[in-house]
Amino acid sequence: MQRGPPSKFEMSNIRNNQLRNRYRYSLESSLGSEYASRSKCDECMTRVPYATLIATIMCILGVGVFCGTIYRGTTLTGLMMLEVFNQRLTWLEPLQTACVVIGASMGALGLMALFVGCLATGATRHKVYRGSGARIGGRISCAVFMSIIYVLQLAWLVIFVCLAIVTVFYTIFWALCTSDRVIKEKRCIDFTQFSFMFPSTIRPEDLEVCPPQEIKLFCKDYVEKAEFMFILAVFACMLVILSLVHYLMCLSANYAHIRDHEKLQELEEIQNLNDLEGLTASKDRF
Image (cartoon, rainbow, N blue to C red; front, top):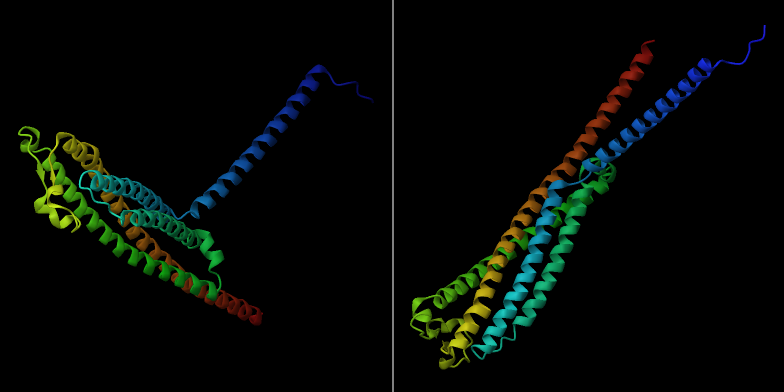
């Protein structure tokens, strides 16, 4: 018996079933793709060395502020010595060039330490340091970076002490500028007691800042701005020292992870051998 064409009710049911199946397929595909993207995202997040990344950000930020403030501070110091004390400091330009070189070197060192941290983090460590030669190379690279950063930390401590001394002297100069004898009594600023800070070729009359325009040039245009620059340089130097300490901790942890990874791999190989021996022994029984 032949069946006639489907009714409108059956056609609507068929259409609804098709829409449900299509919606279910799209939902499953979207959930599957979302789960896959989440798993990839989680895998990438576990490969990021967050401690080394924070140390790198601190290092680059501190070195950038240090180089900018030292460059500006030394420029103001050179102009002050030339226009107020009639002395030209020839060693300021090499110092500014050295600051630029220090900034570039520290930035490159931070990026290399970040690369070493990426290699020793998460699943990347299991892939990179699988062989014994790779593990030895990883441990040597961590040890070399620890040695370099330890020496750099000592150098930055010396820079920090020098900057602190310069900042203290600029603070004393600013205290002289804001004293009552200079503001109210309009007296000269006498630097005779600070003659050891100036070149030996300076004349005694140049150690006194007397005219009002010269006092304004010395205090407002140079000392006030240079003191602020050197204070920022001191804090930037502290930030760099903290980042270097952070690098040492991260590299020590990476060294331990690479060393322990060798032991874990040996334990896995022993476990696999034991499982294989147990499997062969069970086969021999039967």
